Image 1 (cartoon, rainbow over the protein chains, first blue to last red):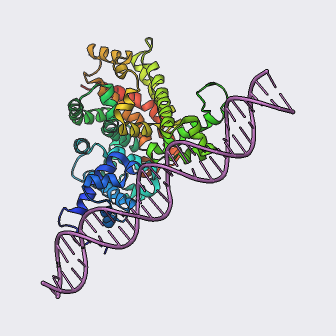
Image 2 (cartoon, each protein chain N blue to C red; image 1 turned 60 degrees about the vertical axis):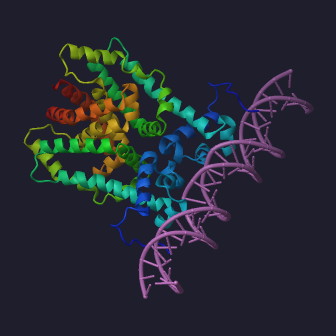
Image 3 (cartoon, chains in turn brown, orange, green, red; image 1 turned 90 degrees about the vertical axis):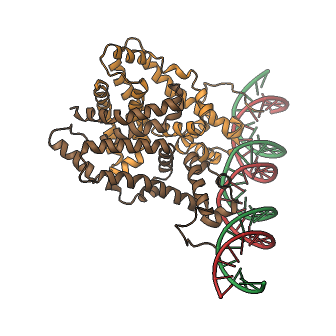
Amino acid sequence: MKPVKINAAADPSTEEKIKIAARSVFHKKGYAATRTRDIAEEAGINLALLNYYFRSKEKLFDIIMTETMQGFLTSVMFILNDEKTSFEKKIDIIVVNYIDLLIEEPDIPLFVLSELRANPEELISRISNKKVLMKSIFIMQFQQKIKEGKIAPIHPLHFIMNMLGMVVFPFVGSPMLKSIGDLKPKDFDELMQQRKKLIPKWVNAMLKIK
Amino acid sequence: MKPVKINAAADPSTEEKIKIAARSVFHKKGYAATRTRDIAEEAGINLALLNYYFRSKEKLFDIIMTETMQGFLTSVMFILNDEKTSFEKKIDIIVVNYIDLLIEEPDIPLFVLSELRANPEELISRISNKKVLMKSIFIMQFQQKIKEGKIAPIHPLHFIMNMLGMVVFPFVGSPMLKSIGDLKPKDFDELMQQRKKLIPKWVNAMLKIK
DNA sequence: AAATTAATTAATCAAATGATTAAAATACCT
DNA sequence: AGGTATTTTAATCATTTGATTAATTAATTT
């Protein structure tokens, strides 16, 4: 009989092993390049078990994708919507948290971006409220600063693009950057550590430009 | 008898039709998600012709990938290594050229980055001289500016990452950005046009930060 | 312990997919 | 025009790959 999801909390056994393996392989290779046999092997289980627990490659993928995006967004949104934290401080926190996260999980951005390109409508609809970011307190604070004449009047998306670009791009392009810069993994990590402090400074300098 | 590449210049017929279709489909979907039948259909030719002209999916892909990267790099390197153009002017030119190129070919960055992740060593070795960028006149000019105390002493790669991040990321993340920002394609294009002028300003502001 | 349910495995299926072949159609050459 | 080489097609292979099945083992219940 097929399992209908009983003890979600309990043992990190087979079902969880499969999810862990699936997360790893999907993140590294993407949906199309992933073979269910790859996942089974990585999880150390029989291939049939994957379908026993998750019905299909697609269903398993949907679960991993949802969890991946959820984990990514909620943590960020939590910070962005804090009332007590100043605009500048939020930038600091976001940059540090994001870089630390990406050092741990460097495959996530390219994974998400690739799958998003392959399936825009469907995946984006899953990020619950689309416009939740643009209505966050962070963006309010941004627009308030503009009103006060403290930063240049640009579209908030420019700012988002610049932040994300500077934080995320190095990880997305790390193979290329490591190559052209002749960086060892340790050198790369060192640069990322520097960027935790540098990016907020750069961003603030940019915002002042008229 | 199999063709051994005779008239490379001549007619834009079957062989070229296949390459055009292959470029389009590979760029959009990546190697793994592309079916040779997709290419054949897009090219309006019989599937067997693809193998007749190019032997295999992989060989065809290698050609497309090489040409794609070549086209990308040479145009940029040409600008970077011009002796007469000032550092600041080069930034202007690169940003404008890159954004214009990406408006025409928005799929290329994610395509290259994805395939690079899937196959780092092999693909990177194909970019001829790895360190050619770091030894370009542009980087020399950058380091000269540091020596003169005109810009802050940071690793050139920080600068590269920031430029590429700000220019390329919006295209890589366009589905997401269009969604969270509720942008129509025209709005997005308008933002990209603005960025041609904004990014050089921002970059210059950043470089001055100590 | 017996009976029932759940988990696991090996074997196998069916569809998708990259590639080949042999024949037909077309272009080329003299 | 006749002959040769090239291009194109339809049919078919062989392998890969997602999924299922039937049988076996392990766990749980009564």
